[in-house]
Amino acid sequence: MSAQPRRQPRRTPNHVRFLITGGVLGLLVGALVGAFGTDAPSYDAGTEIAYLAAFGLFIGLGVGGLVAIGLDAVLRRRSGD
Image 1: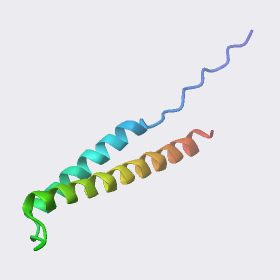
Image 2 (image 1 turned 90 degrees about the horizontal axis):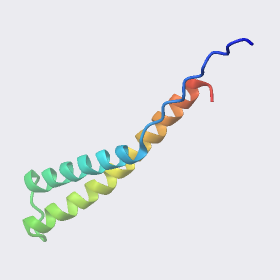
Image 3 (image 1 turned 90 degrees about the vertical axis):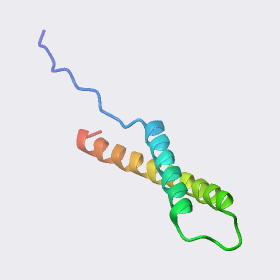
Image 4 (image 1 turned 60 degrees about the vertical axis):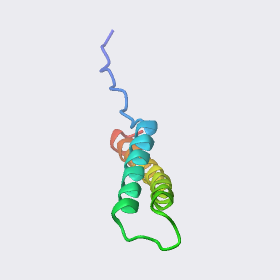
């Protein structure tokens, strides 16, 4: 009986963590832009911060998801699967 070499399991990114990280970073960036950016004349400061934070959240979720998918594709190609 010959011993076959054990194959290492393929490492995959945790997509949920990438989405949460991207969402939180996007939320923070949006809130900071709303707080320290130029004021919109038709909105008060709290509404402006909330809108930009929500927009940043969605953009961050999208970017985090794209990074996770791209990293997964690179790791899959590197492992030969």
